[in-house]
Image (cartoon, rainbow, N blue to C red; front, side, top):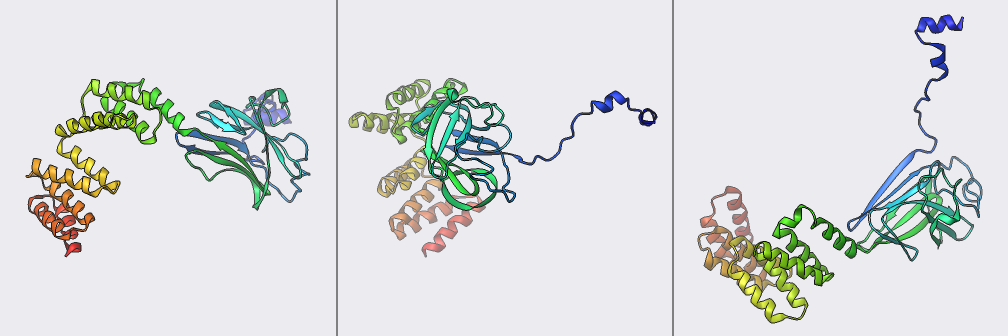
Length: 342
């Protein structure tokens, strides 16, 4: 009878016996959490078991035994650059995460084996980091979760949260060195043909005060490709960092003599952002002298005077800008600034 039924369905009995498994929801669903620190990408891949009314710590998860920090396959932590964990620097890569819970402190383990099934194949020979942490009380969490807490440029805390505990794992990142290495890599690609890329990389190093010797070679490479205002300003800043104030000032003066109206304007606004209003005013005044037919130079000069508190000069220059500007949206904006000052 069964053979007749299969024949009516057009299905061979052998195929029925070998039917593939259906895809159904997992009891402990898979999850992925990511965080960026500087340029470093951190990621945790894991499965989320539920409390489901069970005793978790010292019950479902026994004390004193290695645990997979989740369910099913390895919980895996991945870094895109080196990360310091418990005093040890781990290279960029993927690591199996295991834990040994107790009633007080826990041992957190980063293993070189990242594709096992849970902790069943765990061996201490593959340990790269073993660190002790202290769990803290937390809001109830029905399903296990990993979170990245309190990220800064220098690191982040990876937390396991489940039941009423949070297990904090501090991760430290040397963002300065990660960015420097990234810049080196980028400057070997298409960016190497553009002076702006070399000067931008050198400029970042100046602002952060890192890798200054190599940054000087980058600034020189930028100027060798093309002498630009931005490139000269970056090299001047590097000269000043190295104690050559006279050389820095001479290079700034040379760069300013060749600067375009937008370049001078941009520098002026950068000085305003540093609260150097008088220096910005001097630049905007120079731009007015060099480009008297541009509405934008008067607009910028007026803004600087307004910040300085010189209402009369601000009004006078906004009016000059209004006389010259054609774009209706800019006219409305400038009139609005005038109305505020009246």
